Image (spheres, rainbow, N blue to C red):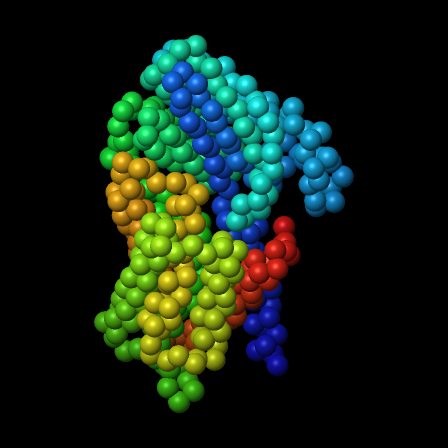
Length: 378
């Protein structure tokens, strides 16, 4: 009984200590779409209501729900706030932006304000420079995802605190820029995709142990632990690369809510398998099976961002390489420490046992939220 109390205390402390962004899963993004028609620029900017509420305050009665009335009463403030953080410039001349309409739409992670606008640059917008400064002062992990269509070409850019300005290279897609942007987006997505991280942790924690006769025992050599991890990572990489490519290329299309719920379920299953092993010695099979689902989750990011028509393969490959680089960094952080602690009596009981229980509880909350479209933790 004392052991259960200790484990329960660890679980509670861990969950209470998790930042809201972890429990909410998805990091802050906004989606900016621009179309160039001769001298005219038409734009649409999708911004999460939760971000706008944090920035300018939308929930006037603090009841946890933003109504259409509350949103309409703040439209002037929203316009002023957003347009002050987005600058379109043709050469040395700033373009004049005019708001056309406000709409509301649902993305996979919540409700978004849709701001449609046009911009007049007083002539052909060449060269066009875009400066994006939304929400970085409030959340350094925020990313602005730009999709620009011009003369049949599609350009995509990821704005971040380190890249707030982008200049259109007329008539061509920069492969170097695309490679760099999508690689960084892949790394950033895996590092802020907390369900993917917890899934990997659930698979990596038992890699330094072997299970037989109902007991966990430390593996004697690093080579055995490394071999276990190599199988897991290879299987996970192969699986999510398959479904990522198929989904982005349009061969697979599943509802985002179903995919995100399945990802949460995969984390729960992997964690519970550590507590009561059903699959022993073949965790690579678990990694491959659920990796197919995680690949669909990665594809949702690329689908919302969009792929440049002139560099589709480059973007897809570089994003995948970024995911692998981010994943490798996680493995390098966990495996050596787990290997050093594997002989500790506390490792199977607390690090593996209590750790897996914490992971299962958090992922179960995600599963309930995503499958029933609820918000249990704000």
